[in-house]
Length: 555
Image (spheres, rainbow, N blue to C red):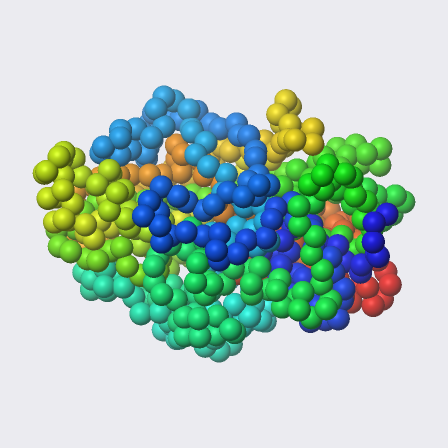
């Protein structure tokens, strides 16, 4: 064994792991946080170099995870949903859905290092899809049970939002006032007022004024490249750093967890490998798995043993099942007037008009709409010229000078209902550097997904037309492009051990000292809400359950 035995060992320093460590420190519980990746600093991010458009989030040694995917063939009857670019043609040629990206960062802060800091609460009705709408499953607790934990996470993050946003029940105002919408977004709101979309400032974990030692945002719009200023609420800064400063939390990075070992009725140890390829064995009274909705089930399946031949925690066969992905569309075009669309937050306003589970006519499961110009990589002049313009030579330069800042993208994200064709398993042949099977994503569309995507595209076209954009230059959808950004559900929480992996507190039904605290526990995805705040709220709630169990000495 290596080092003293902590009360809690947390695997993964992403949203769930960092929030868990912070809350445990507040509760007086010692924790050790492990992560396979490195720490990042603001000096690692470079949106200020001349060729910034050709550099996305930086890769550091050990910071990129890998997985494989088996994706559906495409139905010709839904060809209108396919992705295309005016300048570059079809984005997924052929009849097979294409794997576009695995948006998973290994490192302290995890994927919050490159998130756009949307800070959303789930719609209350989205937590009761089975009892209210007859599909999917219910969460094992309701919105009211999570509300105080949402409030605690928002206070720590310094979420900026509007009092006019009444889309969710709240006990008080957001910690910070909202960001003022950009000029482009103000124009969009005014032009689409007859559509009654109810635009409000998007709640974001980005300070609108100095907060908690973080400066206010400078509105460069490049959150997804990593925040150079240090204002964005990435979880390494907002949750992990104060946990470490408390003296109750320590961190070991660059440790790749190979397996979790159990004996008798308890999880006993975690076997890791360090950067020198030396094995490290760690013990703890409690193990919290927070590696994300792809890596958490992979680790459990790779931890199969005589007592768990199908994988640790997989006595019910539910580990890896119920995978939910990002159901999304983006339409981009040129506005006839200058908008200065390169400025402002990446998604500064949001419409929740169709977010409720019954808001889209004829479907169960909603969606939301936001500007997406920056995240569609259209904020810079190079991509503007490459993707929005068709001229050459001197004419291209003239067109760029005339139109730069008028590109605008509208994004939509919708409900991803769980179903049997979507799951995460172990790849039969592909291995990582340690010889362990990679995760293999099996992603097939649920029956209602094409109709939901069609609604999102049709409504986006209506919104853009009202805004003055009728010449669409690009259509990008998740129908034919799979992009693992918001992913959920592979270690579902629930009351029934036969149909879930963990209970309402995130505790394994089989192993009483093993908890899961990431998006893998989500029973449903919500109608397009970003999951990070809900992950933090769940971890905050579970931390209290861990503390109480430690105090009772029943784990």
